[in-house]
Image (cartoon, rainbow, N blue to C red; front, side, top):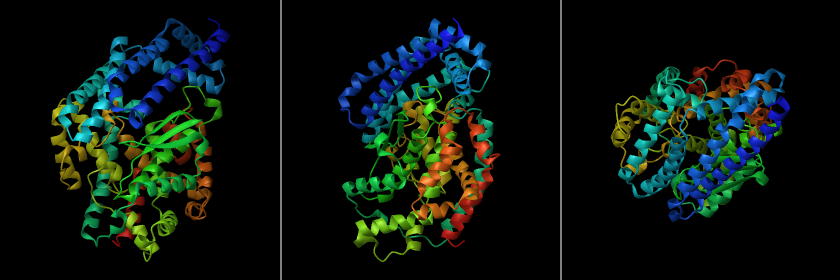
Length: 498
């Protein structure tokens, strides 16, 4: 195969690969939003067949020859094609190590697992979900051995979501974070507590849906290529930069939940919507890594969404929509309500300060599972013990405990540390952004598009053209977790008058 033939084959391959991925994504989206429950009986077969098609496409002799031909002349290719080929070859090398029948069976397992998880959470029945969860962890560990038997299996899983991340690096990061955050949480627990009762009153879901439109408009997200649905566990899925969809969840007695869920998922969506046009249909058309992705979502959710300038805007909107509940409440009072720091049960509802402790708990459980110290059956007991130890809260049931997240049901083992790393990245983004313009003034002046433009120039447009460490360091220099600790300490010391 000549270079020219290989380049033609590359285009054909990527269009077919995109189509399979698009179809799989649409089926998943439908499954967790609008599909009837009974459809779960047949969906695994469809997902299994699509995964088989994808596997055969990726590992076929023709694809192998195409990739090897282009890898041999990589220095002659333009930068985008060269990076694209390298990423595709990396995926090919990993995929071919898994036997096809095991690859397909695992995709079918995940489809079943996610459906069972939804029912298990709804009925508070961990026992129903436990055998699927055990199979997911067992398969992940087995596949890690296929990928690289010389490495710790959990390191292999971490690397999938954040290239180069290891247990050693995670342990060091979480240790530094814990030493900085826990003493601050203890000080706050002894300070005068903030009353946020107005936020817990009953707010009709239809009004909250209208607020979602207000938030999306404020974030300057193009609704032509974006929409919102509702599901049990909020997430973002990107079929392409022309079709990005998020889900959210509203609670009548917690008005902030839907608002900050939409800001979080909106941050993910902005990233995907602004990847380079030249990356469309390639393997590079997406976020650089999950920590980089979560750094965007957590930045919009917390650093922007919970800053005083944005809560002032939010308060005015609340007073307009719910005057009986918010008239008479000052800007300062509302800002403190939105930033209450109290250990809680649910990760997605956690405040900015205690959030990372939720991540540490999941990280510790994943390590125990990979080390063979516990089985899936023991996860609820370990979960409950760690929540008491780390956050001082009692878990009332598995629905509010080990069943609360959808990640493990979908095979996202090794993903959780990305949330904490991404959160910490945000503090350094803020420092760098403020060197170019006044970030808080941009928020108060309703110029979040100015912030969007900065991220597009520095991060979004590159997609996966760079390794994640390079994406971050090209903007901020070396990663310094202490910057995040300093940011949290300053913010919450002021809020609680410490």
